Amino acid sequence: MIHHEIRKASTADASALSTLIQDAVRVSNSRDYNQAIIELICANFALDRVIEKMEQRDVFVAASDCVVVGTVSLGQGKLHSLFVAPEHQGGGIGRRSVEYLERHAVGKGLSELWLSSSITAKPFYTKLGYELVHFEERPDGSTFLMKKPLL
Image (cartoon, rainbow, N blue to C red; front, side):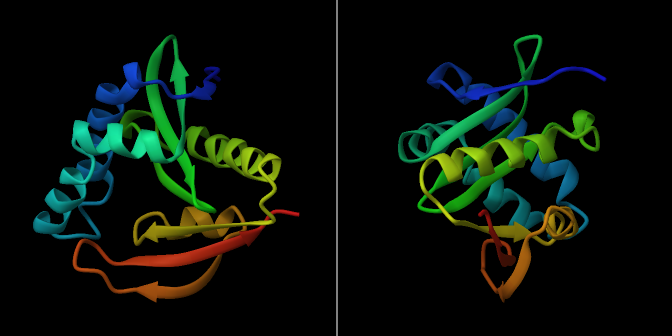
């Protein structure tokens, strides 16, 4: 098994993050969302938007041999933007990234973590112990609001 380092993202990672997220959305979410929604989601992760989010959240990357293969972030008590490069999905990077973020959240004094899951990722989060709160109908891609106690 390949070892992936999880570390705090830097602005030098922003371009790689934008590309990784857009690739992951186009490959992984296309079976659950139509093309117009996919393009709206991708636009939300254009380089300037990624940099903006990095200023507002605690952003982490999973890297292998200095190549960014995954990302996850924490902001306002929510897990945001968990993405793994399509060619690395299914190898545990997402799970390890969530576990890392949960430990980070506990260190910041949070007792629970919330997230808005894509339709695609809902089974993944359920396996990690997140429970459905309610379905969120959204024009830019409907999601499931989920939460998990951390303590």
